[in-house]
Image (cartoon, rainbow, N blue to C red; front, side, top):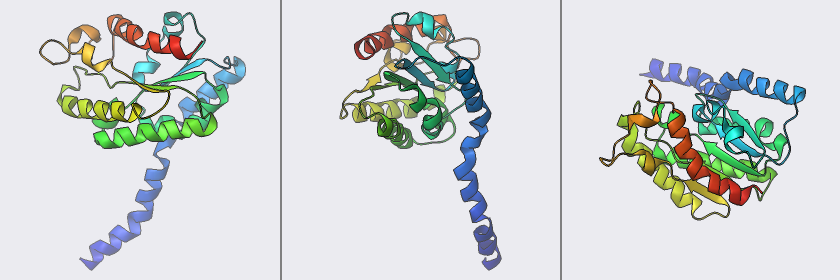
Length: 221
């Protein structure tokens, strides 16, 4: 037992270091954004779409919101804390007029609790508002995908916790794409997704546009 305890204590700094540096996986993606920004400076005061693959794959987002300037800074596979960690590099420099965030899906898949998802969203809001206290932030509800049907109870709980938090904050919104993506049986529907059952097709994005656009119109003009 003493030997085991000694080994655990010896390796503890390694575990702490790993926990502190797990964001480094995304450094190349973030550096690519910065390189692009230097070559083609993005507009100030745009609506920033940020988060995981549902944002990254939204290649038509600028065309889908033609009335406003848009920046897409999605990086697929990321979690909420990744957007927070890199906010100094891919949020603050743009001075966005408003922020639309989609993340939390991968967090639950990786074993995070619904409460942790809520807490990580709170941390994101606090981080971006340390730079710009008035910036409006919208959390797009975690979608009920076919591929992650087993997570449905946790997805619903995480969404409910975020919605409750947003209701207590000024200019923080919960945009409910979760409920309309469910069928009459309360289950995920294949019609919104491409073949992998996780990423959305055009029909899925059109549903999102209808829900997100009124918030963008109200906060970005």
